[in-house]
Image (cartoon, rainbow, N blue to C red; front, top):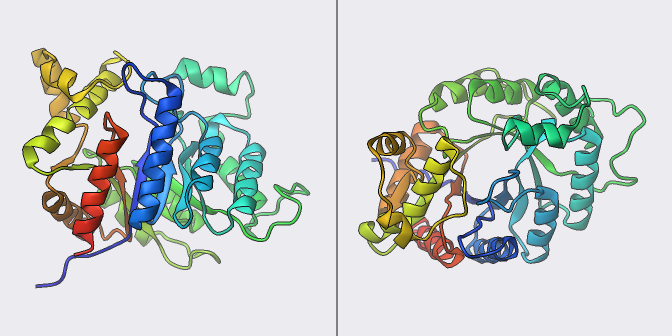
Length: 336
């Protein structure tokens, strides 16, 4: 028998807003989780970009990354991700070049193509500019790479920072074959968002990525990270109970009934229609919820199945203390 694949583990956070709490509480919770992840030896801590959502305070990754970096020491910090169609490439390049100058060698720029919100909010973000469109995503991505020092792409007299010592690590994020193929063509690392795309063809996407990979100066070989939503507790029953709010949140997103994250007690008492139950069966909220050993076994299987070079742990929970406890249990079991 071969030993289980022990790849680096990282953390993805949304700055979840709880019922009867504020955005400031959510952001403080994210910083507490990041500090714990740093002490526990996780590799990266990424924050997402979402807009106009009652349960998510992570609206501006560069701002939140700066706060997270200031409260951590060794862990890499970054975006999972910045939704590039919402922003001018030059603005994103300046923001992340500045972060890299402040925290050299620690900054990741994960780039996504989705809006991170509904279409009306996306229109408010982008205005009437014909430049900010999904169709121009590949062009804007290449512009961004050039601004961040990629010698393959001329920057056209623009500079994201006057005198760079180093540049952030750029990743492509995706949940389909499109992102995988684009990352392969540009020779960039790829993160597959398995935590919200379980039903998609992760194996096919990663096969396309690896088979089509074009080596680049910074990344001579393909590099894959796969995310999964996890929660570990003392018992399987407790983990399932604590995962209740994530299931309600997943259902709320799917049905358009948005609101702050409810408590585990509220989630357990919620009466669901047959239709809601059917929706939840396809949207589990938390994919792997159980004891640390159970979660680690599932992560080992995921790493083995996908050949991932890294795994990223997502997981929306009601209380930051629950998330910290879960990460501590997983880190301890993963180190065995």
